[in-house]
Amino acid sequence: MRARGLDPALYEADIELFARTGDWPVG
Image (cartoon, rainbow, N blue to C red; front, side, top):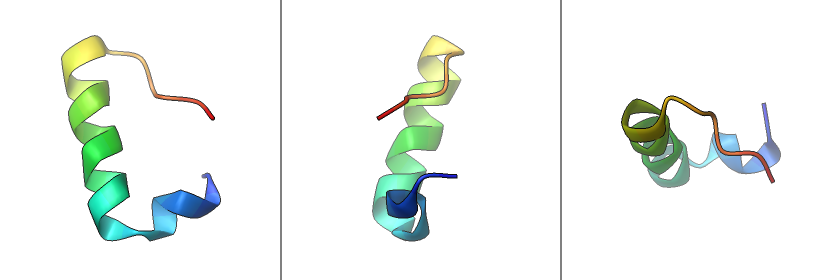
């Protein structure tokens, strides 16, 4: 898990992106 994954807001945004694209955002 990326360091920013520890930030709940950014983590939830990544989950939303993953749900939309089916691809986990990297970087």
